[in-house]
Image 1 (cartoon, rainbow, N blue to C red):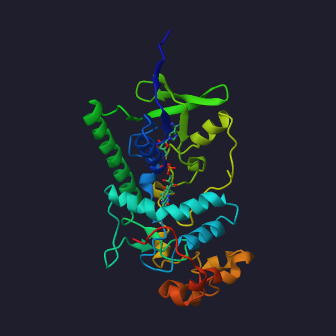
Image 2 (tube, rainbow, N blue to C red; image 1 turned 180 degrees about the vertical axis):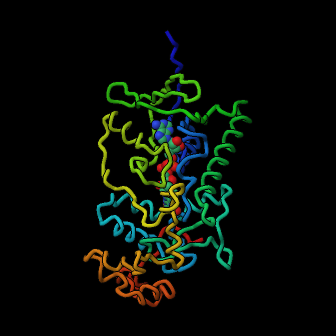
Length: 332
Ligand SMILES: Cc1cc2nc3c(=O)[nH]c(=O)nc-3n(C[C@H](O)[C@H](O)[C@H](O)COP(=O)(O)OP(=O)(O)OC[C@H]3O[C@@H](n4cnc5c(N)ncnc54)[C@H](O)[C@@H]3O)c2cc1C
């Protein structure tokens, strides 16, 4: 009978995109021996495809921005069905996470006076996206990988082994989260190249496997995004919430067939592009839900003014300077 290899770790992180790598860095820095496992090559996570940027209310381009406005935009974009505490944490902490990436070696585009530049994006009241041209995700993954390597170099100096406290298993797939009674006990995995099965035993398993986009025929997502984490969690007995939330992007390539589904980044519209139908009409004005109507531009001329002069056009009352308090992060 084939011997099943078993290894013991403190934490197993399933997925090596932005979420998984950041979780692994945190776990390793807290002293936990951490294994990261990913289905494809290390560095080929979906995160690498992100183009437009990272939403963080640093207020570098428009100083009126702050975390409360970002929080409000996020809740409104989610039609108030969002988990508000997650949206709040995201809005509060995003500026520090962007800055942290810079301290780890990322280099974002700059404003004229040398601050991290920010651009407009759908649903954001002010220019808010920190970016690196249209390859922000590549810079993000490159930086997180570099940080992982630097932690491994520390371990080599301390223990003579690069993988003593942080190991990457690439081209390996997790098919089950293992349990011991009610408690999580590890992950069952197979290696693509050899087909061998192995078990990573750990009292904590972090699922960071990305989305389910590949369930759709036309998609910007690659082959890996088949909702594995959702299935692993469900099979392990976890409840799934808000599964209907899938991002349908308004702009993508349709022709020729070889590029069908490739994303045309939202920042095209953030930088002044407009959506027109086959008759040349700007049709989106007909789709603003009633509840939001009074807050958005009603005519093409007004829409254009929003872009050209965001400070002196219609704004929701909650964004007026008098009602805002400063966020916890210093603008950078
Ligand atoms: C074209 C495009 C452009 C985008 N632009 C932006 C943008 O500008 N701004 C923005 O905020 N967001 C953008 N997004 C969305 C953003 O990229 C994703 O939401 C984000 O990268 C998800 O990160 P993640 O770490 O959760 O997952 P991913 O980066 O998708 O990583 C998932 C990881 O899980 C692994 N995995 C999956 N299943 C298994 C399994 N069974 N076993 C082992 N490993 C597994 C994969 O191999 C991978 O390593 C864009 C997305 C696309 C597709």
